[in-house]
Image (tube, rainbow, N blue to C red; front, top):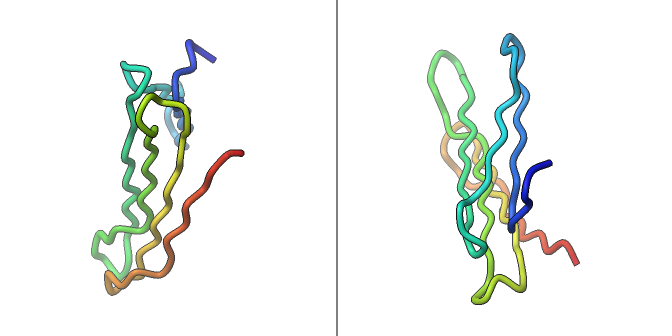
Length: 82
């Protein structure tokens, strides 16, 4: 693992030879990732994961938001690693 700041993402996808690894440039940086899925021939938003640091970067939070096929909110979860 590289120089771990607040977040580091490693992604493995079938059919790709290399994994995708990335993180924010600054110590207080965050990220937002959206996973789209195919439902009955249409692309729909399935899951959104966001990561943010508090002011000063002392507390890191992850939020997951899950969407249904009809774009209805299924769940929202706040994850605190402590």
